Image (cartoon, rainbow, N blue to C red; front, side, top):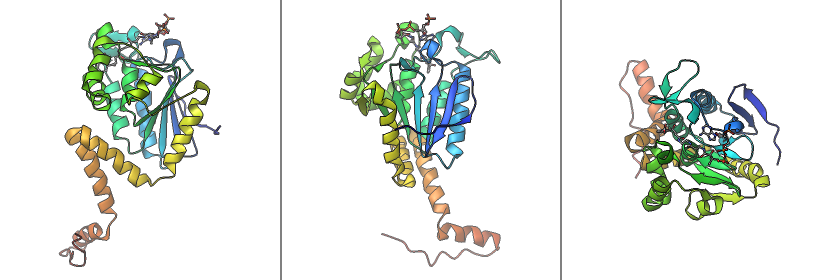
Length: 273
Ligand code: S0N
């Protein structure tokens, strides 16, 4: 299933393209197994900001260039005192945490499309995606305790919700790697397909989702966040409810009355059971 991908914007570390309602963001640093540096994350944040506002996009595919790696986490060559150091401002930062929240709050499904390694911070990126399609060569795992780091946010807690606490602690404490089949068995991925079919399969899943009600999908994503993300999750769900309420005559009557300097008349609106 080949699509005519259109490049939306040019970047150095990523490729951002779209076709037929699907956006695809590719981490493009295959020489380091698609490890990310601060600039990579800045570009991804910019692309995801655009995707949020782009009404033509309904589903996002997040992937890595080549078939050896989805992402191998933070680029260890630029890890400095307190975070990953950008070339431009030389400030150490962990801006991948901003990207994680952005993927979570995006009101459109994000599918991780994983060939090869999803390791360390790269593993966390697939964990925060809504769905994961894995190629049969995919390898999953955390590496932090081996290289002197950890992600005690979504990387630990959301993983625990997905695979259970015992398994999540095993993944973090032992830093083993797991095959695609093992990941499927523990509920860490949604499907495993032969490598050569990976992108077609992801596109097929995206197209299936695109046939659904976008508002229903949006509310469902936010409902899962409300369950896992505390008040921040509730805020996202509540914001969506407000957005829908603004579209009703009842809400519009309140606004009109204010602008017309009169008392609002809500009497015609029913109190539904
Ligand atoms: C993925 C692994 C297992 C693949 O092994 P393989 O097949 O033997 O390939 P290599 O020869 O090792 O790799 C090929 C080339 O790619 C380079 N490379 C690979 N990964 C990285 C990386 N992460 N950073 C920089 N370079 C990388 C190799 O060096 C090699 O290049 P050459 O040929 O030039 O030598 C294996 O590669 C592996 O184990 N990689 C490292 C995995 C890892 O430790 N990742 C980092 C884990 N930590 C994070 O991701 C932190 C995330 C984060 O930002 C964060 C978030 C929240 C809170 C805290 C943090 C935090 O800072 O920790």
